[in-house]
Length: 145
Image (cartoon, rainbow, N blue to C red):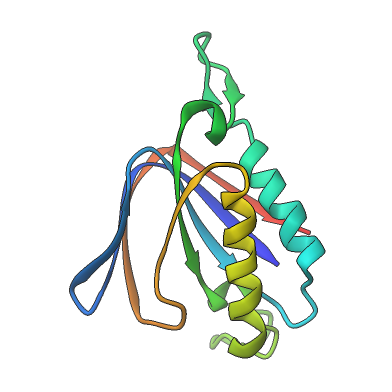
């Protein structure tokens, strides 16, 4: 399981021109699921995401978590994170989990995030989503397990 974390000032997600989700300060998470990923990995990554200290404190040090600042999360499923781009110029997606495996694990991950009392918005699994965001920093981190 892979999670790309982008700290944002705001973000929104639309499908077919219709606003589905919007957040203010927090994270946009792009989540990629691979075939052998487990709930234990999702638990680890949810805890890591909730406790990641990348918001600045009064001394301008990255020392506060999303929970500390009352931030929100926009969690977006993104199978392309599991792409194999090691050969040729066209990505291969054999390393991405099939929807029947990926969707339940993605939804489980979202529920684990909510256990940390974080407001989590989502997109529509498998849809052609348009994500607009204002990256804060920019500040982007890659989490895996």
